[in-house]
Image 1 (cartoon, helix red, strand yellow):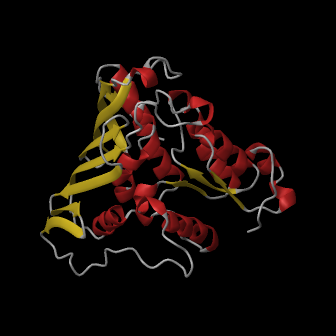
Image 2 (cartoon, rainbow, N blue to C red; image 1 turned 180 degrees about the horizontal axis):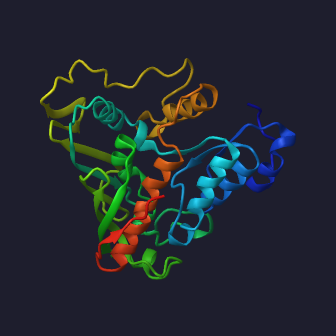
Length: 307
C-alpha cells in the first residue's frame, strides 16, 4: 500500500485514488460523514475501513442499501473498526460461542460508559452536542453482534433526560433530551439483550459485556472471568493470538492492532473474512437508530428491518 499525498479533503483524496495507486482508505472523519465517504471510496475501487459508527442517525437509513450495493458492485472490502470486537473479553466470548460452549444463547448485556462532563466533547460542526446515545451504540451492541454475527429484530428503549441543560437544551437531533438510553432487544436467535449507552453518568469509561447461555455463562473479571459451563472450556485458547512483530495493540483494550491486522489480512489472505464486515457493521449500528426511535416514542416496541 502506498502513502497518500496531502489533500484538502477526504473527497479529493478518494477522487485521486487511482492516480496515486491507493488500495485502501481508513475513514476517521466526523461520524455523520462515515457512510457517505465509505460509499464514495468503494465506488472509486478502494478497500474501506471506517471508524464507528458505520451509519449515523435515522436520516441515513436510506444509505443502508447503497452501502451494501457499493460493496457488492466494487468487490472491495468494507470493515468497521468496532473496538469491542477485539477487546480480550469479547474475543473470548466469540471463541466460546463458536465452539458451542454457551449452547443455546439466552441473554447478553452490554454497556458503553463515556462521561462527557457538563461542557461535553468538542466535535466537527458540533455533531456530538445533544447526540442521542443510541446513535453511537456499537461499543455496547458489539457484545452481541460481534460474538454471534446475528442481528437484533425488535427493540424497546427507555431514554433518561439529561440534567446537563447546556448540552441538551438545543441540538440538531430534534432537540434530543436524552443523555442515557437503555435498550431491550429481541434477537434473531430468540434470545434477549440489554444494551445501555451513557453519556452523562459520572463513572469510569468502559465497554463491557457478558453472555449467558443454556450451557454456561461468561462474566469478565480482572485477570480472567467468572463462569460456569456444562462442557469443558478451560482447555480452549481464549486469549488473543500474538500480533505481527512491531505492531502494538494500541488503545481500547489493545484492540486497535487486532482490527488493523484483521483488515489487512482480509485484503491479502483468500477466504479471510473480517469480524466486522458490512453486515455485522450495519446490524450493530442500525439497531441503535431504531432504539432511539423507540425512546422518542416512550419505549414503543419497534421492529428492526432486516438488511
